[in-house]
Length: 330
Image (tube, rainbow, N blue to C red; front, side, top):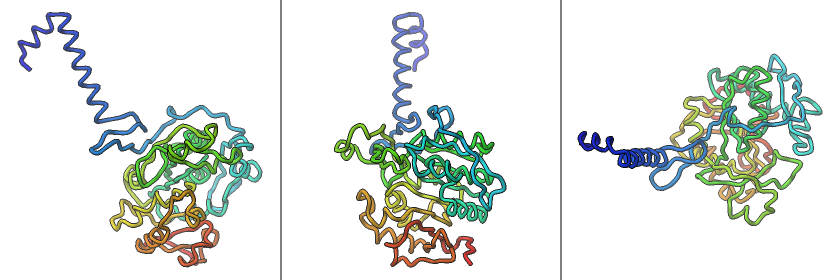
């Protein structure tokens, strides 16, 4: 811009105001197009792509735990640690188990602790972290964890637990649903006693359900984008996202070029076989993706037992182990 014109403009208050307003407008437009607040989405060619939304303590709501308890002793973790739990009437299974016996899914949690010890310096990825049963245990073992959950209240419970346990430095938090597309999904709580079984549905589906049971929408991201956010492997994965496992992992399994090495995948399988919510319409391709990628299925409660993929209808939980993984299953 000609310096003489700018100098003249600065000597006239009205022109100066217009000039400054124009500059602010350009800067605001540039901010809107090229960046975004966390979770809102950044503009990309062809549409809006919500990014991975990593959140911190300041982003989390204030919670009022039913209680914060010291856990039962795990066989492979030196010390017990703290878990903050929800009122039992809204979380009868997970918080109820911690309240009764100090732990939830003890065998599976101890399995994860065994597996992470095979890869010092790796990262545990907890997709569907809920109140943090697995992430809190991993952090208590001094291992990095990335907890992903669409409910910021769940992440706030986990953060309270690791803060009280003195292990908060090991945990990062991501608030997204996980799918094979970038979509806004709505939480639907069909069972008010089991917040751990929360489902996420499309806007169209939400409009057909009881409005009192629908929560605020959450943007999805992809498994690959989360891996890119972690940045380096290996990544030990536990995934329990109420039927969206197929959508979350299909692209990774069917793509021969993997973002990061994932030696183990512990997952709930029941919803896959039932095509719950219509989210896994092509189960054979999904299973073949595991096989082609070098994974074999094992019983997570007894890893000496190898499953047959042809018997997948009988899977409950399953541990997929990569052929190149360190794995002592004898």
